[in-house]
Image (tube, rainbow over the protein chains, first blue to last red):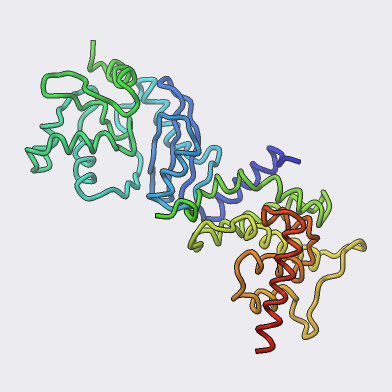
Length: 185
Length: 154
């Protein structure tokens, strides 16, 4: 005997309305592939390129609490803004975020958020902007663990020699995002 | 960190157990009333989930909640075919009394005792809840009761 889609949907909606969830998430379709997007009542908390809901839920549970549930339509504000971004109708995201990361990560990510659409910066530049000019490698680590790729634009950060270096979602996606923004020809 | 005792995300717990909990509630309440009880069971579980201290015995814990929801449902909206409510002589429901008395028992025995004598579940359902066999469930309940008796005599 299996739970019907209707009963499942009803429970998930009731759970979201109860206010007892730590995190709600949904799977979005985008031109760079499926995105898992999670949010708390305070704001966006996780974006994953990897469409593995079970690992995603476990990962976000570690930082934001175990009461994690997929709720269809629960991140529709982010969905709408991402759609607009991919249609080149939006350059900045107007979304609250709920990061819960270490203070150094928080400072670097706040600086990252200010890197404008279609522009490139380097790990060293970001390091200097948070008054840690020798911490380019540590900034690389922060980019690597960016909980909100695309929205916090770590794809705009490249090596000092202009090479794309790496990307959590894979280099082809980094290139695709930078092409979309007109930062690469 | 103990991986065995880690609390899984609610999503994972829900997906793992939703089908069997619905089946259990249908046996207790019938098809028509099981859906509401299903939602109520998982809403109560969600409310309590943030206070869990470990991920052990989640299945038995969930069955205990489902059993309580089924009892509430039978009490508030009785039908002719209701099984009689397990009651205690002082008027308190038997499960409330048992949960208190059995607090010191090992978890498996405690779950077996509460589910059997507090909620009047069949051993086949208790075996499901504990992830064991009917025989093992029967044994856990009876050794739990023996332990309670010894405690009472002391």
